[in-house]
Length: 371
Image (cartoon, rainbow, N blue to C red; front, top):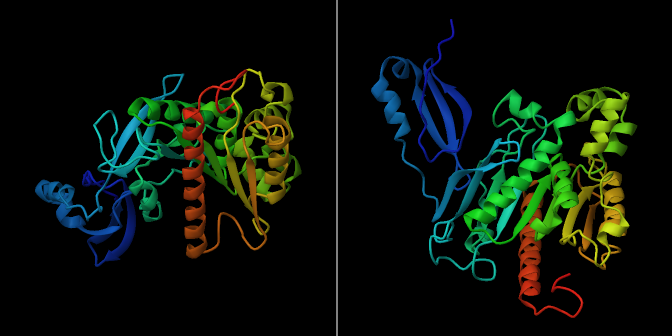
């Protein structure tokens, strides 16, 4: 008969993964966080079952060296009252909440934030080690993981709250997280979405582009309508549960409502003098060999965004398209992942620096600086 053991973990650990069973009663776990490397923890299950003191000792497992980096949890409140988890990590010297002067931020003053989002298929945005982002953290940036609805962070209900007809809640959660970061002391945010996270990324660009300094999409899913209308067989059946059934009117409404490509703002809204803020710089990457997100859907979104949202990149943008003819879905190897991370960090620093430079310019006749 199975037995549940309440095993408190050390407060520095954000994630736990199963490891190899060592003998009949010893289980090896791997603890980590965004700033702590994976650390093995061997648990004697027999002892943990009978000895509360032993269980308490597990919670006291010392943290590995984080190299001056820290992480914490926070929450944003969405418009419907939902509390959206945020995982934040930064250099210990980077100030938040008015903590005082610390490490140089992105251009001085308050720190900028790189915000990652996913929110689909009931898959959590994992808060594991991110050593590739250390150069950005040492420049005084904050990295935030926005655990929006549609993911699996809070169980089945959290997934259900951000799929099919409820997909707009994922975008609303991301907007709430961006606003909360401003209240915590961040100035400027670059949003990053990978794969299905592109639906949330594109939704934020369509609804509130003025909240962003830039946007990065890695193999982003942006043409939900076109993809769902053309997919057949097992893959389409699996996707229906997430986005909607294209064979029904209700399903098509759900798909169209969630589709970033379908909802790119049309021309008049993006003209000078219009009521919508200009889009920030955007960089998206797609691979010819990607068998999950077809590169043609990304290309269609880029063309529509350039035509309507940025008017040929003359107001807002630019919208950059990085096409890889030898790449599959979201990279192929560690070396490629590191190169992508370096490219994305360079883009983020450039986009945020561009925004701050424009904000510092005196207003031009007939319009505000940076319009």
